[in-house]
Length: 130
Image (cartoon, rainbow, N blue to C red; front, side, top):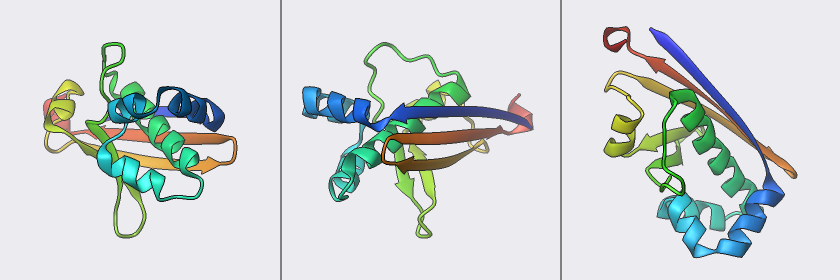
Protein backbone atom coordinates (compact mmCIF):
# COMPACT_ATOMS: atom_id res chain seq x y z
CA UNK A 1 0.00 0.00 0.00
CA UNK A 2 1.17 3.51 -0.72
CA UNK A 3 -0.35 6.54 1.03
CA UNK A 4 -0.35 9.99 -0.62
CA UNK A 5 -1.49 13.18 1.08
CA UNK A 6 -2.49 16.67 0.00
CA UNK A 7 -3.72 19.68 1.93
CA UNK A 8 -4.93 23.08 0.79
CA UNK A 9 -5.98 26.24 2.60
CA UNK A 10 -7.80 29.03 0.77
CA UNK A 11 -9.00 32.46 1.80
CA UNK A 12 -12.75 32.57 1.20
CA UNK A 13 -12.66 36.25 0.14
CA UNK A 14 -10.33 35.35 -2.77
CA UNK A 15 -12.72 32.68 -4.03
CA UNK A 16 -15.67 35.06 -3.65
CA UNK A 17 -13.86 37.83 -5.57
CA UNK A 18 -12.96 35.44 -8.39
CA UNK A 19 -16.55 34.18 -8.68
CA UNK A 20 -17.98 37.70 -8.63
CA UNK A 21 -15.48 38.86 -11.27
CA UNK A 22 -15.61 35.86 -13.62
CA UNK A 23 -19.12 34.57 -12.92
CA UNK A 24 -20.49 31.59 -14.83
CA UNK A 25 -17.29 31.12 -16.81
CA UNK A 26 -15.35 30.29 -13.63
CA UNK A 27 -18.19 28.36 -12.00
CA UNK A 28 -18.67 26.08 -15.02
CA UNK A 29 -14.93 25.41 -15.36
CA UNK A 30 -14.31 24.62 -11.69
CA UNK A 31 -17.59 23.29 -10.26
CA UNK A 32 -20.06 20.70 -11.52
CA UNK A 33 -23.72 21.64 -11.89
CA UNK A 34 -24.54 19.65 -8.75
CA UNK A 35 -21.82 21.46 -6.78
CA UNK A 36 -23.16 24.80 -7.97
CA UNK A 37 -26.73 23.88 -6.97
CA UNK A 38 -25.50 22.74 -3.55
CA UNK A 39 -23.44 25.88 -2.89
CA UNK A 40 -26.12 28.24 -4.19
CA UNK A 41 -28.62 26.69 -1.76
CA UNK A 42 -26.47 27.69 1.22
CA UNK A 43 -26.64 30.98 3.12
CA UNK A 44 -22.83 31.25 3.19
CA UNK A 45 -22.38 29.97 -0.35
CA UNK A 46 -18.85 31.29 -0.85
CA UNK A 47 -17.62 29.26 2.12
CA UNK A 48 -18.97 26.13 0.43
CA UNK A 49 -17.46 27.06 -2.94
CA UNK A 50 -14.11 27.72 -1.26
CA UNK A 51 -14.20 24.38 0.56
CA UNK A 52 -14.81 22.55 -2.72
CA UNK A 53 -12.07 24.48 -4.47
CA UNK A 54 -9.69 23.65 -1.63
CA UNK A 55 -10.66 19.95 -1.89
CA UNK A 56 -9.86 19.90 -5.60
CA UNK A 57 -6.49 21.56 -5.00
CA UNK A 58 -5.67 19.09 -2.21
CA UNK A 59 -6.57 16.22 -4.56
CA UNK A 60 -4.24 17.59 -7.23
CA UNK A 61 -1.44 17.90 -4.68
CA UNK A 62 -1.98 14.39 -3.32
CA UNK A 63 -2.01 12.71 -6.71
CA UNK A 64 0.61 14.90 -8.40
CA UNK A 65 -1.90 15.45 -11.20
CA UNK A 66 -0.54 17.70 -13.94
CA UNK A 67 -3.28 19.89 -15.34
CA UNK A 68 -3.00 22.47 -18.06
CA UNK A 69 -3.66 26.06 -17.06
CA UNK A 70 -7.40 26.72 -16.80
CA UNK A 71 -8.14 23.01 -17.15
CA UNK A 72 -11.69 22.10 -16.16
CA UNK A 73 -11.93 20.80 -12.60
CA UNK A 74 -15.58 19.75 -12.79
CA UNK A 75 -14.38 16.13 -13.24
CA UNK A 76 -13.40 16.27 -9.57
CA UNK A 77 -16.70 16.61 -7.73
CA UNK A 78 -17.36 16.86 -4.00
CA UNK A 79 -20.48 15.02 -2.93
CA UNK A 80 -21.82 13.91 0.44
CA UNK A 81 -22.72 10.54 1.86
CA UNK A 82 -26.04 10.25 3.70
CA UNK A 83 -24.14 10.85 6.94
CA UNK A 84 -22.87 14.19 5.62
CA UNK A 85 -19.30 12.96 5.12
CA UNK A 86 -17.75 14.61 2.06
CA UNK A 87 -16.55 12.26 -0.67
CA UNK A 88 -15.13 12.65 -4.15
CA UNK A 89 -16.80 11.53 -7.33
CA UNK A 90 -14.17 11.41 -10.07
CA UNK A 91 -14.93 11.16 -13.77
CA UNK A 92 -13.32 8.15 -15.46
CA UNK A 93 -10.99 10.52 -17.35
CA UNK A 94 -9.93 12.20 -14.09
CA UNK A 95 -9.31 8.84 -12.36
CA UNK A 96 -7.13 7.79 -15.27
CA UNK A 97 -5.25 11.12 -15.38
CA UNK A 98 -4.60 10.84 -11.63
CA UNK A 99 -3.32 7.27 -12.03
CA UNK A 100 -6.01 5.77 -9.80
CA UNK A 101 -6.95 2.13 -10.12
CA UNK A 102 -10.29 0.57 -9.25
CA UNK A 103 -9.13 -0.48 -5.77
CA UNK A 104 -7.43 2.83 -4.87
CA UNK A 105 -9.26 4.87 -2.21
CA UNK A 106 -9.49 8.63 -1.86
CA UNK A 107 -10.47 10.07 1.53
CA UNK A 108 -11.53 13.70 1.95
CA UNK A 109 -12.01 16.03 4.89
CA UNK A 110 -13.10 19.66 4.49
CA UNK A 111 -13.82 22.53 6.86
CA UNK A 112 -14.66 26.20 6.50
CA UNK A 113 -15.22 29.11 8.84
CA UNK A 114 -15.68 32.79 7.95
CA UNK A 115 -12.26 33.57 6.51
CA UNK A 116 -10.71 30.26 5.45
CA UNK A 117 -11.56 26.89 3.98
CA UNK A 118 -9.28 23.88 4.28
CA UNK A 119 -9.24 20.40 2.81
CA UNK A 120 -7.14 17.32 3.40
CA UNK A 121 -6.98 14.43 0.96
CA UNK A 122 -5.46 11.01 1.58
CA UNK A 123 -5.05 8.59 -1.31
CA UNK A 124 -4.51 4.93 -0.45
CA UNK A 125 -3.08 3.14 -3.48
CA UNK A 126 -3.50 -0.58 -3.87
CA UNK A 127 -0.16 -2.33 -3.43
CA UNK A 128 -0.67 -4.46 -6.56
CA UNK A 129 -0.46 -1.35 -8.77
CA UNK A 130 2.60 0.33 -7.20
